[in-house]
Image (cartoon, rainbow, N blue to C red; front, top):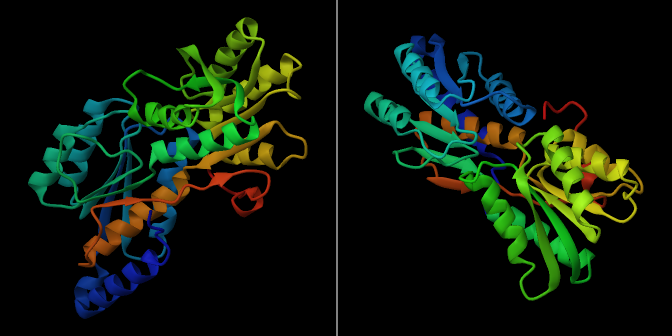
Amino acid sequence: MRIMTGMRIAGTAAFTAAALAAGPAAAETIKIGMVSLSLCCSYFVGMDAAVKDEAKHFSNVEILSTDAGGDAAKLTADVEDLLNRGVKAVIISGAWIEAAPAALEEIQQAGVPVVMVDRLLKGGAYTSWVGPDNRAIGEGIGSYIVKRLNGTGNVAIIRGGPADNSIGSSRTEGVTSKFAGTGVQAVIAPGWGGWSADGGFKQMEDLLAKESAIKAVFCENDSMCLGAQKAIADAGRSGEIFITSVDGEKGALAEIAKPGSNYAATGLNSSDQIGRAGFQRVMAILAGGQSEKDTVLPSPIITAENVAKFYDADSKF
């Protein structure tokens, strides 16, 4: 696991030096495409905003941002449009799709670098990727749950879906792998939470009606767990069930920080961190630097003991 600390400084210095050496060309506007499958929710909005904010360090860099509205075909069309507009590099946030071969083929044929952020899309060439190790995050949360339960108890699992979403399945597989050989048992909600607070509320409500022995909850993202937390509170069981998740969104961190809260832990998967790292990687590549092919960003487990280090009231996510 490699922390990206200092990359922006190094990339900025190299790129600025190259621009100064170029003389009049330094005034040329450098266009970078930020392609998102969806800006449906705060996680992806925060990633897009982080890229734009990092670009403010450069007076001659323009971010051209797109939103495919969840449509993979539209994402490919967005890529084609950006290439026609002369972007020098493309950043792709693929959200929940597993592959976008047509889009990656278009970028490869254009000969511009492409950096993937968060999801590593399959089936196509790419220049670099920065994002989380979702299974490792799940393993960290799983270890936390086992320790807190002292090795015994039922844990409700709320999944985002759909079934082929490898990000969610990797998180849950990481969590449940730590239950093996202990007395901790997973109780998996049969439906999908849809990655939303409303979906998490509904799945938790259904589980509580059927299961009386739940001691903890794991949700594949924070939003679902905020919904699950409300269902638990409505059932009067906040004092007997603690909840855990992944992402580190502002609302979840605020709950973790509250004294006596049953929101116990989340694994950091910061869209702000990912977006900034993706932009920094693009700038390093454009400056001619040698970049890693794949970079896993740090994902510490956040609890009441360290939440103050991560909470940002001004965060977009």
